[in-house]
View (cartoon, rainbow, N blue to C red):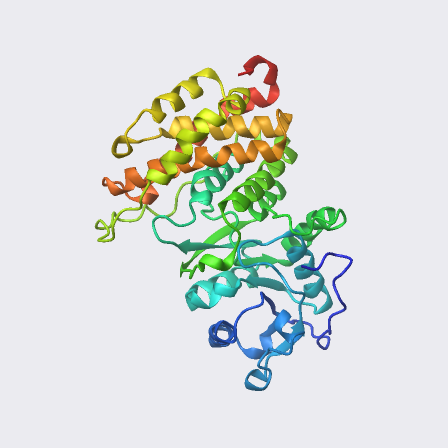
Length: 402
């Protein structure tokens, strides 16, 4: 991925008082590209669109079949699984050069999203009614669980946001939102950390910009689209922990969570598929309890360690991790990350088997009758209820040494 200093000069479309929407695409297959362009041109006049694609550089863009579109080159991006600092720098630079009013950032799998959802993302920022339009995906029950277990509950509890996917890879940005994110991103690209994930929802909340989310339907997920859990969880969780640290003055103040606009999804009939095998997850958790107990004891208080000990002796069929225990674990790891209690890489690695225990519990709860969203809602509420504990530990960590 290109850093701020490596981004090439891009061709600029002719000056126009209203150049409309810049659509920044990730590199994608010909089939994906055709679907995305068909969705866009069905919703917007071609003259209102500026398409920025890395496929232009590789001469893979089907220019002849889409000649009315204005197309410019964009740097290659690793946006297959998360947007990064360099992506936001590129987005604002391209919008400025081409005098665009708003930006739509789309992932390779965006061709699988509903055309109405993509239109809603774009129209929200084009109409100046929203600064940050975030995709809300319809995922399978056991997909996106790092988001459900950690990213969403933390974002909701600390930044009073109901955005279900705070690390969504399909976004609409107003020009001022893009400028703010680019300014934050430059701090990382200048340090050669251009692949660091950013947190647009948190940034919008601090800036008091308007944020909204829009249903975009199902999103195709490819198993080979990104790194495995041992890379994903430490990277995105560590990035979120660092962002929370940087914004502590904001989230320590009480802010009312906005009321939910939509009810929880109607419970679905149990899947005819066989439930996921949780035994490997529990074996990893039990082994970690023996091997990582010394590290966990530096991070977690005795009550949490006692709860984990009891879970190691629980049969798979009865395995349940309480929402309050999970919230307390994540908060204590966040505190340890801030205090550098141990090496941060080792710390986040030690969180993985605890996360696997949560996943096993989530699967058991949802296969026994609860809907996935109702359980995730309960987890988020536990994080909100336990926020005073986090604030106390943040301000006076010595009073709460494990």
